Picture (tube, rainbow, N blue to C red):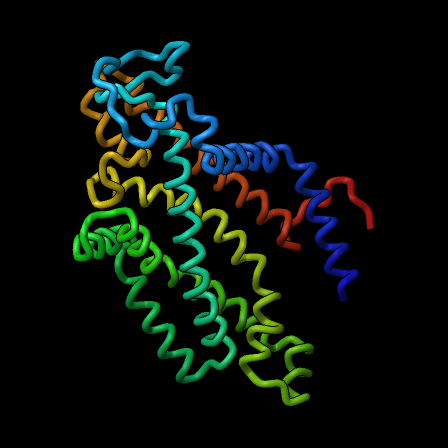
Length: 293
């Protein structure tokens, strides 16, 4: 079994290495991750990146000293974008991980046990899905109070039902497989079957969905910050920077444009990588590009 898994992983890596679009999107993701990790060391002006104002250099256009220009408080925009990568990636990771940890077990249990358990869990899921996720998140943040953590928590609460649906569908299709029936015949408990056998065989669509949801979570949090419900000043959050800079767009275009480009790039990269990963991991759509077995 271990040899089969190892061979499958090798095939996945080889296919990934041959996919130029996947490598391109992965390179962008890695670049932003490195920016987030080493922000204090690679930002040209770390103190400005964290929010220190420099009034004497307000609205300097892009130049050698300030490649992305400066904002209305004289802070270097490139430095703030680099520091902002920490916030955006943290939001995406937190929201997706919380949604997976909440939604996946509920979906697997509902799909495996069926009956009243399935009915109760899925009706609760439908209640959450009946509200538009972003509108629901806005209502939650408005109740909890503006702030980055409250925005992240609200998004995680609205995101889990999608994983419950996905995990349930996987459990329903897998629970009738011969190896599951054999486990039942041997007296293996239902919870052990769910988390020992069904969960590992359900990870592929969950991983793909999580990768693509990273971009959605980042965009949603940027939207909350844009309307004043997410990160608060002087945080270098990209959505907040776009919101602050939009009134200066006609005269100082670089202020809102570069943070907006950062949001666009990271969202595009996660979407492209998730799409490529789906084609590679799904046996039904996998493209065996010259690989023989």
